[in-house]
Image (cartoon, rainbow, N blue to C red; front, side):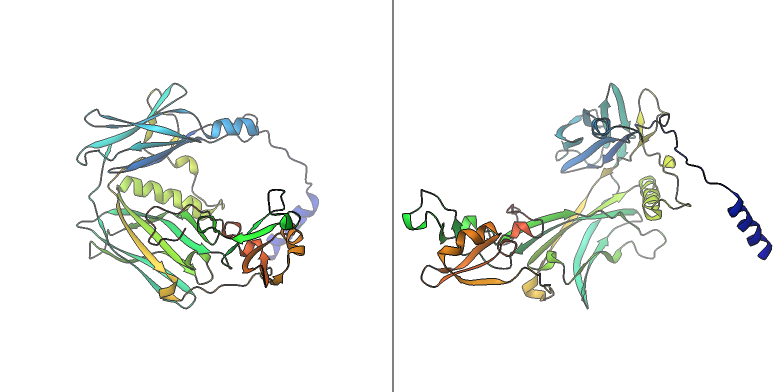
Length: 387
């Protein structure tokens, strides 16, 4: 072993290192990528994109990344379901009236070439029998029970929605100096009661799951899948601070799609290591009608989706632990002469009265849209009357 090390050391000393600039001008890609599923009974979303060349300009990459085309779903009895463009390569087809006993394929016409997926029929349906959570110290774990009548393969995804609040409720509203204000407030600005529909105390945010979660009951004694953990939250996570909702989706998929997605997951998990699977091997079920040898990335399946929603309220769990920020100090009994200056420094009033003065704080403590990435867009199905 010492001899081998010696030889390597001599080679390292005697060899030279030269600058190397690879010629990537001859490396061409541009492969079509089509993503999505044909989900029976609801809207189905599909995304068209391309893999840009390594030496492509920003303008070329922008043009390639979201190719324009015509997209539709076709059933085995010849019925077409046109997908409407939403911009950025996103297309949505309404499959609410689709029959469950037929097979379906996706068609995309891009630059005069038609791409279509292999017709597939929906796999046997399953049911989300239960959703539950358990608190383990500083972690809240989320679980799903899936009831099925046969062996199969499944993909789980979810959508999170949550409501959170600013640190201080804004009972007061500052109006900047203006000649339209009463004379005594034209140079200082004026503070009035905050209208309920203008309050920045309640905010909402949402996020779709990004991890690829695949499960199978093949090789198990039971058809049912019990207590599958699909998500977890730390007790300092703002999502769990007030009202949290998670919509869970379980899609029965074919063995072919399971293998395809499992291969995709392998590539993602290896993260470009020396022994990672080759992405060029990822051939799905989409073909170009004019040239079936063209490499197209994507797998389109027909899905009969099972869904279920779970709400978690922090006033039930008392799980959330707020971490203090450095800007939470309150300025109390502030008089009119300081209002405009404080506003320019990024402060807002949130409580008080003209006689005793008003309490001001950093606007990040008063306006919920400035911390947490949320907005005032409340889901129509949200369980309370907050605005």
